[in-house]
Image (cartoon, rainbow, N blue to C red; front, top):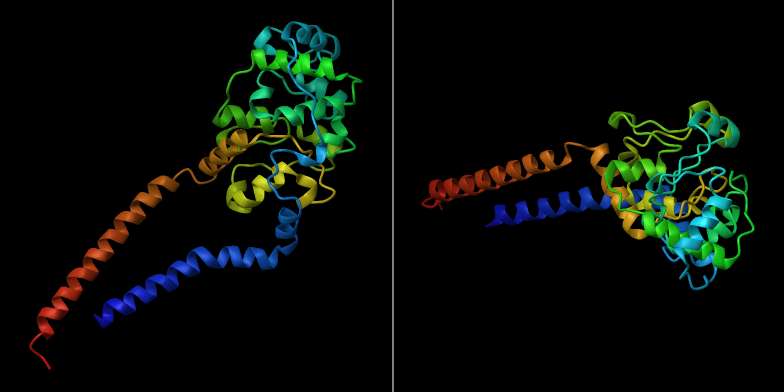
Length: 283
């Protein structure tokens, strides 16, 4: 029985060390990050700092007209057969970054954020150098455009979500996904080439990434990355994908780990039974 108690103590110590040391070290070594997360209550999927939003019950028919008037000079909407006015290389040279196709944007961008973004892109993204200018849209026009975009959008998952939400600036080379904007244009526009995200989950961890994506300036003041306004569902889906590509054999390794642990427990049980048998008559 004494040996089993010792084993239990060792299991607790190992467990605390394995699951507790990293969070403790992070809170000490990256105190400013934890303070920022607490200060802004991140992730904030209500985007509280942007203020209130009027009713967004627009007319998609009028929205298409407004979209064609105000948006098609830079953007395409392949879901409705609207192609972008420039190829990717020309667009990157003109704007610094390739403007996104907006077919599915309402599926992964928060609706409230999208309203404020269309109202004032620089304020919503917290990036004064953001390439898109304010278009002078009124509330009705914005509501109509959002309604039109919603009528054409479809759900995106995994690699497709990564490409649409992150792929204009970031790549994942191990998945053979490369940034849509050429690196030389990104460097000129942003100051440096954004990192490849193949193993970013291992480097930063989900806790940091979720908060950083939600409000980049809070965790890294002065960063050139804009706030993109991902909703909660899309953020969780993106984290799942980043976790998968950063450690593609994780599930297989965990299964092997469980088998090893079961084997060790069986051997411990047999060893203990053998010890009891050998020493039962020894006093």
